[in-house]
Image (cartoon, rainbow, N blue to C red; front, top):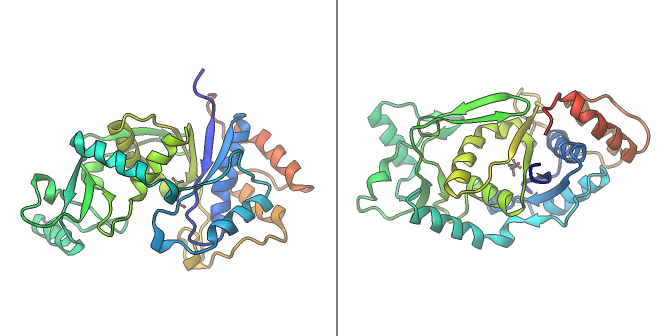
Amino acid sequence: MGAAYIGRFAPSPTGPLHAGSLVAALASWLDARAHGGQWLVRIEDVDTPRCVPGADRTLLAQLACCGLAPDLAPVWQTRGTGVYQAALDRLVEERHAYPCGCSRRDVELALDALGRPHRRNAELVYPGTCRAGLAGKPGRAWRFLTRAAPVEWNDRRLGPQRQDVESEVGDFVLLRADGLWAYQLAVVIDDADQGITHVVRGEDLADNTARQILLQRALRLPTPGYLHTPLVLGANSEKLSKQNGAQPLDLGDPLQALNSAALVLGLPARTGPVGQALAAWSHQWRDSYNLPGD
Ligand code: GLU
């Protein structure tokens, strides 16, 4: 038998829960319940400039109102940043990470010189300029040294996935030039620290998975199972967000909000108390998603 199931919902406190983020919250809760596992909540607040004061409390109150209570007390990333430094030190020691002195402009110029396109998903594909050393420039950030080998992984909804991180993403940032820890490193360390066995999150994050698997391998941490849930689209056909009209959840009618999220997950609308609806959905979950037994 594998490790006991531990799942999580890891919102960034950049605003209240909305119809899109509730889908990921509900799916991760249902998956944990369907497996008889634990469900944890982690407030991902390392990107402090994007955090909105009080949004963490609002998110937790909204989850509670929807009957989604974590099995252990929630944790905040900023309470444990020492562990990220220890992980970076280890990566540097084992030559998986190197300092980078490039500004955004430097990266754009280097890509021009190589005749390569600038962007992929709005991010610059770092061409590895500082791999050979800083050439007298001061170090600004720390990057993970990727290798030309595709990462293959299986998503329980999207199926087999493959990404060559070196050519498609480039050496990615671990510690940012502004001194903040990058999401990729923080999420990998936190998932491992909390013993997360299954990650269930929105499909917009699927593209990060290969980077996270590379970090897990370099740090000799286990790779959890992954399931990326369908996105709720906003008026402009992009992922629903505050910028394209997402409204905070109506706490006056949590069942209605849950029913909308359930629909996105292919589950039928329910009536009655929230607790009963959640229990019924968790029983249907395994069949609806036709999950391989684990
Ligand atoms: N904090 C991330 C977000 O809110 C989610 C991270 C994750 O689930 O891996 O987009």
